[in-house]
Every structure is written in structure tokens, then in C-alpha cells.
Length: 153
View 1 (cartoon, rainbow, N blue to C red):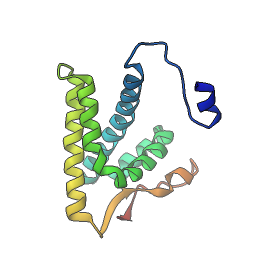
View 2 (view 1 turned 45 degrees about the horizontal axis):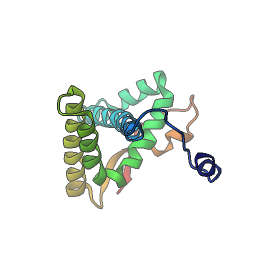
View 3 (view 1 turned 30 degrees about the vertical axis):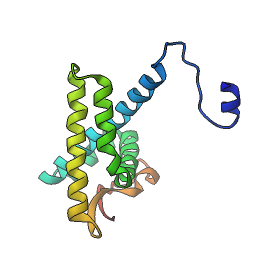
View 4 (view 1 turned 60 degrees about the vertical axis):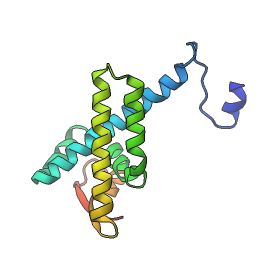
């Protein structure tokens, strides 16, 4: 079955583990992706609030340029998907289990994304909001960094 799925372009792999391993893999990948993007976004918003956003982005562009490109795209892609973040981070927290301190990270991220989504809808709908530069992925390493730009929702 896997070769047929692969032939049609699906990234399918056989797991040698027991029942639940595929779900665990999916939840772990989602947790890593959403966790890193959520952490990046929360720190970028904190830097913006204190006026340190341009310096932060310049520093990250110097030391972690590939991450800046990835996170810049990820943050912009988050806008239309914000409504899903609360349920997805809560699902990751449930997967981790109530006895796991890591579950608290994702429960907090769910609360953060709920507040961010509510604020964005109430305050920013139809107006300009701060967004990470869309040009990050096409920028060459030696070009000047455009840290933040206004983005229409």
C-alpha cells in the first residue's frame, strides 16, 4: 500500500512501532512546529511592544538567517489559520498528558493564541497591523533587513 501512496506523491512511511505511533509522530511534529513558531511570535510581539523589534530581527538575521526566513513565512501563514491554533495547541497539551510540565507550555500557547486571535479580530480587522516582512524569503543575505512592515488583513 505504501508504494502506491508514494507513487501518487504522498509522503507515506511504515512505522515499526505499535498502535498509536503514527498519531504520536503527527502530534510531536505539530508540537515542534507550533511550539517554535509560537515562541518566536510571542518574543517578536514582546520586542515590538518594547520597541526592540528591529534590533531583534537584525540580530536574528545575522546569527540565524535561515530561521528568520522560515519564521517570517510561518508568522504570515499564521494569520489565516489563527482560528485553529487554540484547538490544536490544546490537543497537543492533551496528547502530552496532564502530568507533563510540557503540556502547560502548550496550554499557555493556546491561551496566548486565543488572546492574539481575539485582539487581532477586534482591533485589526480591516486595518493595518504589524507583520513580519514578506520579503524575507527572497532577500539575499547581504541586503539590508526590513524588519517589520504594515500588512493588510
